[in-house]
Image (cartoon, rainbow, N blue to C red):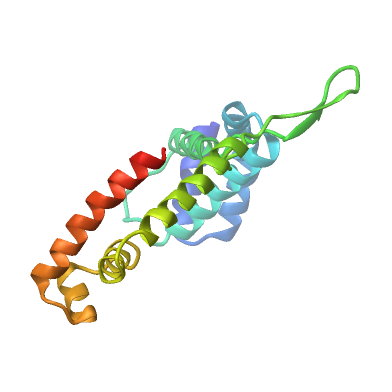
Length: 189
């Protein structure tokens, strides 16, 4: 009896819950499945995990398989190869932040600083100061309307209710104040 027929017989017995057939199958084809997984993963530990996953899944799903559904050695090989490919795809490539070259000199990857440059920070601070000066130049009620609308996110109706002023007045305050802020900011630039 060749390996393909023996494998088919063992798979049929495993479908019936035969544990000794499962051990015999592992002994018979385990190294072949490992070789297939190794070819794909290039990592023995990962390949062993793949083979274990294939065999455990085979055992767990053997009870639910329909009678007459024949499994073969080639089926096992294909499943192992596909699982190995999936395992490799799941791996995230990792790059160490530091390494040593052949001379033993240590190097590190440059990591981009996502914070703003000192010049950008200075310009933002200066822009904030200009905005504060321009806001202080507005009358009190229009300034309150702008602050409620743009810093607290209130709608015109909500601002009208909060300040207890007519809706048309609030809209006019905000429109005039934004025009005044624009002119003030342009004049300060």
